[in-house]
Length: 162
Image (cartoon, rainbow, N blue to C red; front, side, top):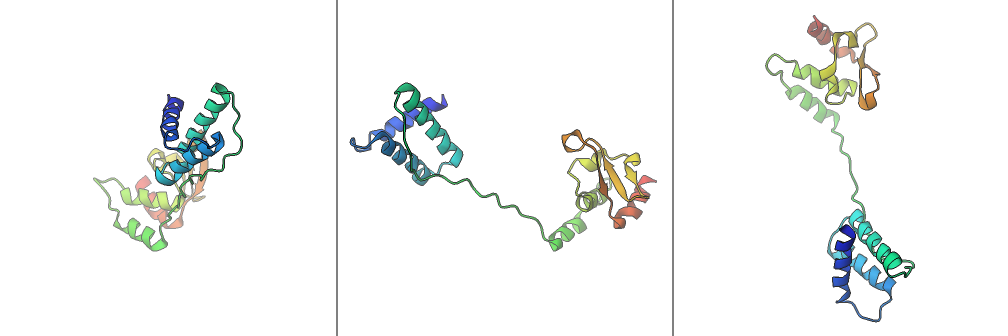
């Protein structure tokens, strides 16, 4: 269905192209138009290219040479990490909810580098105050791991465990 969709779009675009162009030039113009004027993603453009290559190779029996079309670029995923001041402000604004130690959990998340659900599965036997460590059981990939425990959280964890 997808390849048929792209073949239909390509055939529609061929009507506006001059007749004397080679198949490679027609395909280049179609793909360049997708990237430049239609704002499609790189994966969408690749899908259209593969559909057309399949059509030329398997249906028409005509191999296609090099295609020098303008390629759509994959978006850059810029990661943002909060500054120390932003993290401190966030941790200071979190309040306990309904007797549940939400502020302690948020500081465990930050201080131990835990994933969001990991503090919810902690048990008393997973906390080792002498070694200042937490044992995270069944973490990502089903593996257990041991993470260091910040010393500033020891008094509150001791009180919570009692």
